[in-house]
Length: 217
Ligand code: DX5
Ligand code: ZN
Image (tube, rainbow, N blue to C red; front, side, top):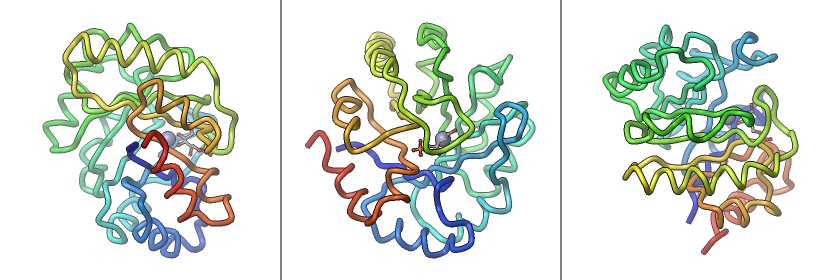
């Protein structure tokens, strides 16, 4: 069964408590928390105080996706705010190996995110060190965009790299995941589905999470 990680970017920011309670009482596994700085991506979302507040509202895994430049400057602060998994973008890290070690030394699981144009083979010498790879299936910055079909090919490539290098990394797919395309994404080898609009804009978010969870048996 896939790990389901609803993205709170699509939650109701005036009623975050309600949406946290809904997720707590659902089959959602992780809370996916999207941090944007207006520099790495052309949008600004929310940051440390909001994550610290959400941390108090759930016991589920807080999966923090940093779409920011110089993520090393803030890793300790995100640990302090309650992140369990901290994912940085390969495109934002000149010293990626050092950044990954820093995250692990702080006591968090470490993830690397790849933009749609970034090739899988760039992970060859770091894949054994990471807990998660987040493949962006849209250009990061906004919820509610359309899934880029080439991602399915990248999932297969990543899966074989993980097996080849004996890595324990989970494959997370982020952007445009729907009930319609999720079966193909899971069949290609994904472990974690992020879903923003599909969950929060549906008539029954709890039921939608259950349906996503059931995909792939
Ligand atoms: C996009 C974010 C995603 C986004 C997904 O930059 O990283 O996590 O919230 O939203 P949907 O599922 O609506 O595409
Ligand atoms: Zn995300």
